Structure formats: structure tokens, C-alpha cells
Length: 212
Ligand SMILES: Nc1nc2c(c(=O)[nH]1)N[C@H]1C(S)=C(S)[C@@H](COP(=O)(O)O)O[C@H]1N2
Ligand SMILES: [Mo]
Image 1 (spheres, rainbow, N blue to C red):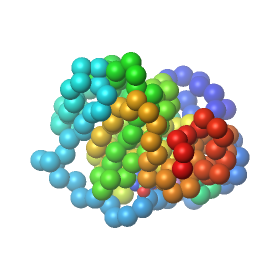
Image 2 (cartoon, protein in one colour; image 1 turned 180 degrees about the vertical axis):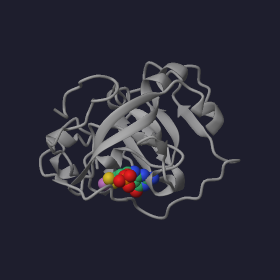
Image 3 (tube, protein in one colour; image 1 turned 60 degrees about the vertical axis):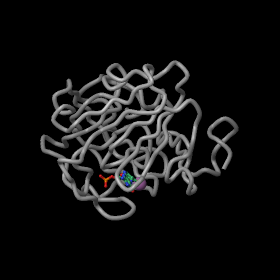
């Protein structure tokens, strides 16, 4: 079932018809985000890992350099916190664990902020980012991501709600303390575990997040 890991590749996090609490099946694959779809500027695009890195230096990849990294495939469903789940997504890209090896965080890092174009952000526990099925996806069902679904890069964290996976990803910030991202500041749960139905910030318990 979806909350269990069945492997690191095909099969992991596809729910086989089971949905998290309070979710209903979406028709197809809806597009859902706040604000406009950014235009891709190849000459300006990079992915930066910054903040509390082990060496103190930032790590930067051009799209060509990034797509030359080792890749993984993960099948997963996408759970929007507003209640719809789209199923059977075949994601392809670079495992977050690969990024963590290439750009190691300092030992004090507990959380990451994933940054997208236009300042959209999502905070994650380092353990969620480091999950075996978290990936930075460039492809979906065998094709490049479309613009509205995040081209050229999006974060996919299958066990968390969709707001934890920025489309148009541009940065990973290593943090030594937790800080709320875009939706986490606007009433959504700081951790956002879909299978536990923890979607709203009023459901947070002590220790789930920084003060609101
Ligand atoms: N940059 C950015 N990424 C984002 C969002 C957003 O508003 N901006 N919305 C998130 C939310 S709430 C969801 S449910 C998913 C939706 O992904 P989809 O449009 O591919 O279905 O994107 C996530 N990634
Ligand atoms: Mo969402």
C-alpha cells in the first residue's frame, strides 16, 4: 500500500487504488499552483544548493550538468491538500539522496527549504527530503515535464502533500532550524504527511513546527 516502501524504483508509492484519508480521485492530472507559470530561460537557469553546506560553499548546476547526474524512477500518487489525488505518476530524475551526497549538508542541518521561481517555497524535515523516494524530477511518464507541471525541474516527495513539492525548482537551502515556507505560513501543516491526514496548521502538535 502507498504508505509503505515497496522498492526504490517502480512500484514505490503508487497506492493501487488506496487513497489517504479525506482524499478523492482526481480526473486525470489537474494543474494546480499559485500564480503564473514562469518562463524558462535556459541561459539563466541554475539549481543552487546553499545555506549550511558542509564546506560552507554553494553548489550550482546548470541544466546540462544536472541532467548528467545519475537518475532514478519513482512511481507515486500526488495528493493535493485541497483533497484530490492524481495517480500513477512515473517520475524520472535525480534522487534527493544523490544531491545530498554531492552537496553534503553540515551536521547541524535539520531542515531544508525548497525554493522555486517567484519565491515559492516549501520547508521539509531533512529526513523527509532524504527519503529514498524523494526526487528532483525532470520527466514524467517518459517525457519532459510540461511548463505547467514544473519544467524543467520539480521536487517530488511522494509521502507528503503536493504543496511540499515545488514546481520550477531552483534551490535547496540547508537550514539548522525550521522555518515555514509559502503554504506553511498560510494555514497548511508544517510537516504535511498525507497518509496521516495532517493538512492544516491547526492540526499541528508541539514539536511539529516553529511558532506561527
Ligand atoms: N512553484 C510552485 N510549485 C507548486 C505549487 C505552487 O503554487 N508553486 N503548488 C503545489 C501544490 S499545492 C500542488 S498540489 C502541486 C500540484 O502539482 P500539479 O500541478 O503538477 O498537479 O504543485 C505544488 N507545487
Ligand atoms: Mo495542492
